[in-house]
Image 1 (tube, rainbow, N blue to C red):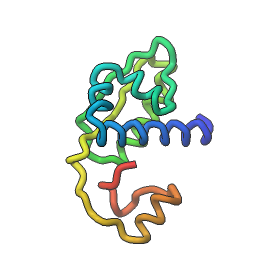
Image 2: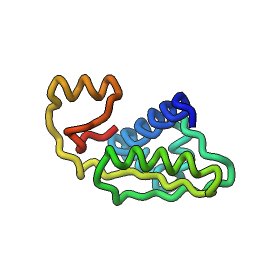
Image 3: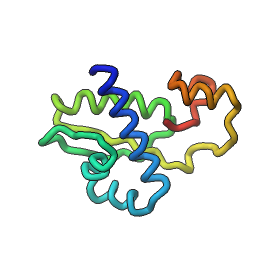
Length: 117
């Protein structure tokens, strides 16, 4: 996948997860129609692709990479597994300046894997 498509997908996916975490209506939409939830956040799912929701993941940094892989393969496999971890699985804390800089720069979450993207 081209890096522009990958970045757009990651951004839309992250927005959808944040919406689910912050809005009960979006969480209901996730349960009832995950394809529409994704579309509302700019994520296109190939026609004919089944969407299955997986809420049992713990590591947000691993979820993003696995999610991108699932999306990349969905056009061929016909299945998109949508990983949406529960927000209470992450420790809430203040970010150090260098952690915030790394998030803003998009350089990853090394050293603080509990931070969701």
